[in-house]
Image (cartoon, helix red, strand yellow):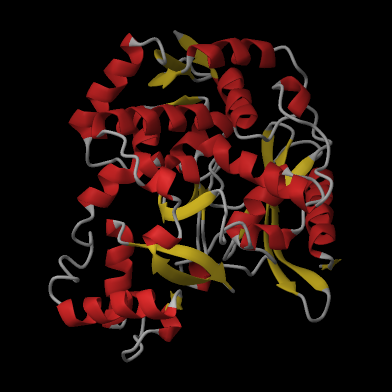
Length: 394
């Protein structure tokens, strides 16, 4: 099987919910009312199986809100901050990175909770601090949810110098003994798992081999076409090569996936996989005519963008993240949001939202050598500013 770049690109956007709904059979129109908006947001999460979280809010909304805003017209940016809470159809865990994940996948991650019996970075932090762990368990039972700010101990000076209680809470969370009940102003509130995850979900366990198959297929569903490396990275399965190869062979034998090469314009081929039904969708999409009329800003952590080599293959676009670079070394800016217009990435904006002043400052703008790029960028920028209730400045 082979797929050209045009079909691969359109398929990726369709599976990601970024092409016209009428081309893919997805619901169309703006969600009306809070209930409809929340349901639409959950459907976006289910497309990929995760919604990656990030703290940076300089552009006026954090990444998880930006992902929703790029797909759902007229949605309140605050919805992206409030999806997790008591009774939510999501739970928080390590998916791609720290993510909100559909609740029905909780049993699928049983193998990861078992693997994380010891913290992947800090080792046996619970066993090495039994009194702290016992005190934390007791406080959760007696007091209910606790934020890290509520835990005893001296504060740290960064991620690798966290107070012991927070390290213990994080280890208990990864191992499944505690869960994150909600986030308030982006601070996690920990609680006992049995008070967060319903019994009917918590007591189910998906066997390891079945879980890996399901996650690979879910990753493939979200991407459309994908190379094995992309599939491995989607749910942090990179160090399980033998298991992944065996799982993909089983999916192929079942007819759930087929091998497929992505053929570049120069004729070079990249090995990968695709679902049979997506081959049919790709053929339908080859006949449509996307225009640049609808233009949106994308989070740099959008599921379409985090695999930079794949972005280059499908879009011919240099996707970089320069948060950790010193300012003089940045090419595009601190937190650049690419502009998707139709099926092309045509621009980048580095923004700063100054909500008290009611303005959205453009710190930098870069446009691809594509006809209509500046006009499309302006539309995407205005759409973002209106969603935030701000005026564009610069």
